[in-house]
Image 1 (cartoon, rainbow, N blue to C red):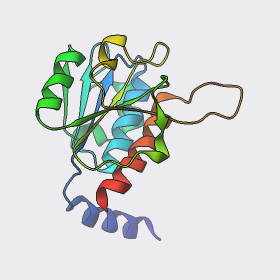
Image 2: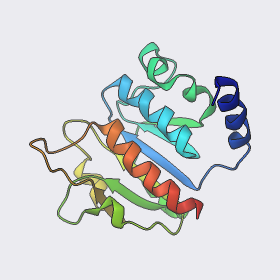
Image 3: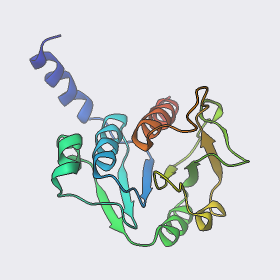
Image 4: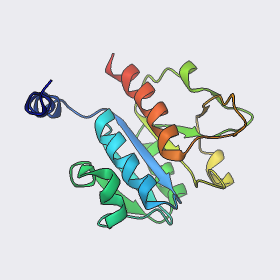
Length: 170
């Protein structure tokens, strides 16, 4: 396809409603990761990103470099306290899904969302705060077969987000 055909097709896709699917980025250190998550979240059709704790917020050059404008079209909001936000989202009917390796985690491909979803991501090194674990309904993990025990947070987000978005669209 030509660039013009791709742009035209994308304009049609933007007319579709966003999914009942948001994400909480709690204490993400890298602004490049934040920008990448913005771009992926927009592409997958998420309705909103919540940036919590030390997670950087637009406008910042390193976010813009990887988001490529997604930070201007995808709704987002900063909240200092992820725990209070997640409690609010639960009251609004969101199922709270962590992307984290814990004893109770299930393989992401086995997860079948049936309602409003909030996917929670944690710090690149320390993961999701223990205080948030009690608030989750489900925890997902991505199987690792190599020597490394995890993926980059923005890559892991992309895998889980597209899996969830695909099922929510059905």
